[in-house]
Image (tube, rainbow, N blue to C red):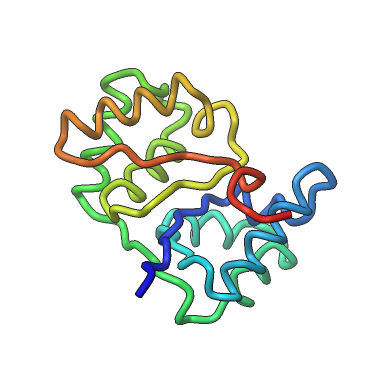
Length: 153
């Protein structure tokens, strides 16, 4: 039996469904999740951020079947790893939420992170920094991609 990949998707991908530049790949990714190609993994931070988003963005999540969705609750372990990223200056304090997303994905041992955040998540310097901190703290490096690199268009 082939393993279904568990992918952590941050809030930018949900919003991307309604952005001209990102809609095609974002919508395709959620369609592939619904079709069973992936398990969608999000964190409690993602749900908090979506609670502040417009209703149409929130609906993207509500349209995902419960059996295709995994929500990672916040935990002290996630917060410790997030803080390790900040201490190592992978990102600054203003990017606390971005570090929290990567920490949640790392602790949950997902197969990949998918994001449109090219400044603090999908950026070669940030990715290598997250990987280094993960290794120092006993976590595996998590491959990080934009939706365009994951979906079949």
